[in-house]
Image (tube, rainbow, N blue to C red; front, side, top):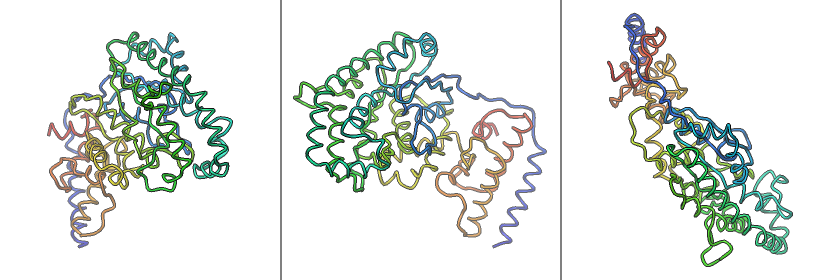
Length: 407
């Protein structure tokens, strides 16, 4: 078996030498799309995460997939009122006017700040959601009654103002840029984890908080104070593309957010789910230039590759359809096809020949099939090496896919 491996290595080195000497006249291909995406909103859009482990925000994932320039104007803690004020700034207006796509996530702080930070609940005092829930339970019915009275007095005006601001934001954006695709997200419920197998899902206090938030987001039928939730307003906006993040994260906040650590923001899996939902909602005709490299890094690095199929199999399949777009050959998903990728492809070929465990698995192993002929062999390693050599010599400036196509 060792002879097979060393034979493969010898053949690869021979191919390497031949390839390095075979760099031809320069060939060019299209690079970035030239498209500009402007992102507006709150800390979901900035990519905030309490533990600092976020791989990429949804805005980064979407713009990277379309090879677009991202201009992120979002601000942590922003409310709809903050964004409306921001849109009166001349420099912001100029940036928005130059956008091809405008991504908007707003409204979460309008709802979550009064629900989770008030005279009865203060999330800053707790490190975990279990501690917060236990604290609420210890105070019992007295706390629940006081909280209900407070929210009943506070939230109708909050929701009315939020709905009005959302409509004004959409109108302002259409006025500033009538040609851009404006993409609004609905607001998800970070405490909705009914389908997740966790003790939080069965907590009465957690269900209480989740119900409050759901009512404010989705509205309450036959309740004049809450009949129109802010998500209904967003879904009813004219001239915009609506991404229903509420439905995308529905019932699975435990896996998609940092709620267990009292962080209402999406984690890396959550941002990946939002990005996939956004790409699907935009319904663009794909031209073959899309690049799933960053999505694959998020998919493999976040643990989604191991867990997402069990949480939402259909969504997992949709994401799998993106993560290898224009990123075959880039085995380590670092954005380049180079010697390390060629070496990885050779290692997979040798592992297969020797019947041993491969060092690369899953979608990264699939990416090693650079020529997409259904097998990983010396030809894949040679193509990766040839592409790397051509780039190094300035003889080819396109993608690895372009290189394979022109062979």
